Structures are given as C-alpha cells and as structure tokens.
Length: 236
Length: 307
Image (cartoon, rainbow over all chains, first blue to last red; front, side, top):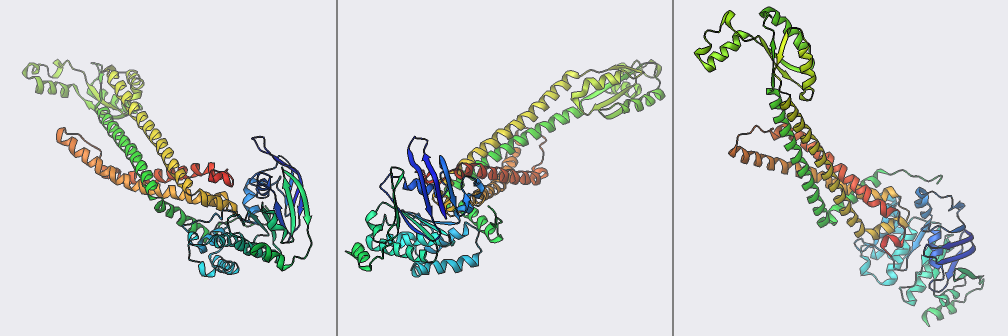
C-alpha cells in the first residue's frame, strides 16, 4: 500500500511541485496518474522512488514510513518496485537478455535463478525470440517491452511506469497497457503516469488527476469497458 | 530494513570482479592514460627514492670514515691506555674503537715524512697514545665528544664537528626531500587516477542510474570502480618496477663510464621495489576508485544522467 499524507514538495528553486497531497493506493490497484506537463506527476513518482524527499508530510510504502528510512535502506525499498521509463533506458552494448538479467545481477541474484527467471519473463512479454538482439535492433514497442521485462524480473510488488506509451505508436501502446493490466491481475500494484488523458479513460481504471501540484480529481470509473471502446480508441 | 538479506554471494563477487576488469578493456584509451600517468608517478617516486638511498649511502660511508682521534695524556702508559680503551668503548654512539700507540704514530710519520723523525723513537717520542674512534650517529657528535672528554686520562679530541654537522644536514635534507617527493607524487597519482575513473563513470552513468533504480546497493555500484582502480594500480606497479630497473641500470652504466661511483645494486632492492610499487599502485588505484564514485552515489535519477 502507498499512502501520501499531506505531502508537499517545494524545490530549492522555489517551485511548489506538490501541495498537500493525500492519496492512498491499495495493494493490487491499477492507477493512472494524469496531468499536463509540469503538473507534478514526475515529482509524485520521484517521491515514491525516494529520489526526492517531501518538504512536509509523510509517505508510507508497504508499512515503511519513508521519513524514517535510512540511506542505506533505500536500495531495498526500490527492490519492491519495478520502474518503466518513457525513454526505455536500455543499455545498447548489452543484449535483450543481458539488459533484463542486469537488474537481477544488481540485487545479487543466483546465476541459475537469473537464467530461469529472465527466460520466463521474456516469454511473458513475448520477446523470447529477441533474446540475443541489441535494443537498437528492436522497434519502440519491443524496447518498451524489454524495459517492462526488466521492471518485472525482480518480482516487485509495485510497477511504476513513467509515460510508458510516450514514445510508441497507438497499437504498441495498447499492447503495453494490456500487458500491464495482465500483470495487475496477478496482484501487482500498477501506477502509470501519463499526460494522455484520452488514453486512460478507455481502460476503466482509477484515474488521479494532478494539476498545479494538487489532486484535481480522483475517480474510480468502475464501469465495464466494452472491448469495442478500446478497439475504437487504439485502432480507430 | 528488517528481514532483508544483505550479504554478497560468491557469484556476485565474481561478477563484480569481472565487471571491474572488463571496464579497463572497455575504456582502454582512458585506462591506458591512467596507467601511463601512474607508471610515470611511480617511476619518478622510485627514482627519487633510489637517488635518496644512494646519497644516504654516500653520506653513511663518509660518516664511517669520519674517524675521531682521542689523544691520551702523556703520563698514560701503554697498559693504562688499553684499560682506558675499555672505558671509551662504554661510551654510547661509538661503532669502532682502535688503539693507535705512540710508536705506531711515529712509525707512520717516518714512513710518510722520512728520516727527520728517526730520532724521535722510544722515550724521545713526543706523540701521545691515541684511540681512533668511529661515531655511529653524527647528529650526536658533540654529546659523544663531551662524554669522551670527561674520561680521566683523555687529553684532547680532534674536533671535526663542522663536518659532522654538514653530513647530518645533508642526510636530513635528502630524507625529507625524498619523503616530500613521495607524498607529492602520490597525491598527483591519486588525483589523476580518480579523475580517470570519474571519466569512466561518466561514460557509464546510464548503467549507474539503472543500477540505482533497480535497487543496487552503494557497495555494489562502487566495487567495480574500486577493482578497476586496483587492477590498473597492479599493472602500473609491475610495469614501473621493470621500467625503473632498466632505467637505473642504464643511468648507472652511463655515469660509471664518466666517473667511478659505488651505486646501490638494483638487484638488491628489486624485490622490495616490486612489492612496494604493487602495494602503492593497488592502494592508490583503490583510493582513486573509492573517492571518485562517492559524488555519483549521492545523486539520484536524472541527476546521474546530468538532466
């Protein structure tokens, strides 16, 4: 569970990025954080990842208060999360397999476990046949799937995707969001930050809209989304 | 954080060792520059140390030849003089004490100056019995001389305190210059190697940002860079000790062609030079790697990438 209690963030430059935010995201939820550029979405993510600390208020992740978190424990907090970046952040001198395995090596996983898990995850994201390819040889959508595989490989309880569809075409966007939806069905909390408001409405998930550092709306649509709606949006 | 396993597996240690070594090859131009600089610094340090050792050796040999003459009173018989010798030997800071009788002294004059001294033998010998003494530590020259002077039966002591003082000063100068050269060149090496590793790190900032985002610990991120520095230090240590051997032998041969000089043989110090260079190289490399990554570890996310 992620809880933001009266969280505000003011940068040294004086920018008031977040103003008294109160959000609670339960385990296994699928949440879209939407807002225009400069609304405070990135700050929201940075606070969850503990890349920034709040100026006031408290953030609690899986019963851990980030205010009490020691610097040496930050890596262990991050192991609870899998991050998907808009620009994929793949290492081009490594193959697809190595890029995904790298995330496991970084946390000291056993080599046999790395081999087994990476193969499984790459199969899950549909990239078994691209294991030996370099990221530059893949399409945008495939690169994002590698990024997603890397985020998933350490079996995190939370997946955070920062504009995951920002650099890919609508068809690929659908595939990525569909994949994230499937992952969510297995109990993983999914938080997607995006500025594409139209895209999120067709998925029928909880939407938190941030504007000028404040929560403008927090809606759980709770409507059964017709498959036709999704198809219409992505494929016209 | 409670309940989290924080130990490194052997496979992780081996992976980090491999990564550190691989970094050297992947960034070979920068590594080569780094090794070159470290070799130069070690070479200069080694050369300065060897010069210092040679000068100290010369100073020591001059010091050894710095014999002090202790003249005994005229009324001291040969037998009494030998007993006095035992007392002289008890004075601290004396390495050698040789009796030089008045007969030996006149004989020496006769040999060098001729017949004029032929009459001055036996009871007509005006020279006193004496002891030729070598002092161990020239810096305590005056103190030793005054102790000798205090012995009953000792008449006069040849005072060469000016020479002793000069030799002591030269010895101190050489020692402190050697130490400063080592410190300064060591710091230069550290600065350059840490900058080279910082460049390696800049080239790998993308990987570092990913490492941090997936939960790699500071130690995990740091180790390959420390290993990179240590391996570069090891290579530099071996190369510079070999280079110093060839350089020293070459200079020694060239100088000996012009003037005969008793050098310290390199083979007698090679083992020590190799070990010291390797240890110094590894320590400087490790420190360079450790220092340079520190700044990056404090950065987060986009900051690492310079965004």
